[in-house]
Length: 71
Image (tube, rainbow, N blue to C red; front, side, top):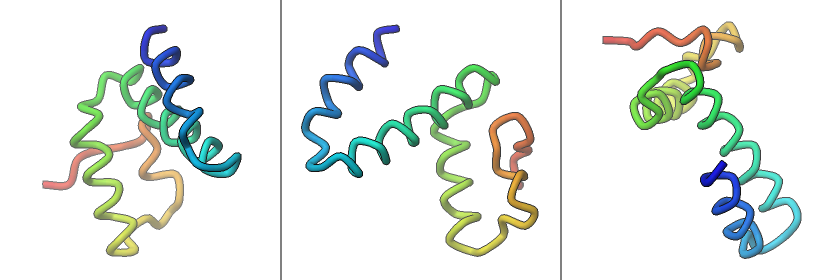
């Protein structure tokens, strides 16, 4: 619960409504990764790298419950 209440306070300074929505989506993904027992930092770094390299086909591969690290 603490990350959500801290996040709520931080979202006040998102700059706009759309910025707050973007932050809430990112927080949802990170918390979902946490609930699935993943290393959130490793998951997020790899997903951002996959998106950058256009390796996200099919689209459901990067979701936290489907993710397998690429080594």
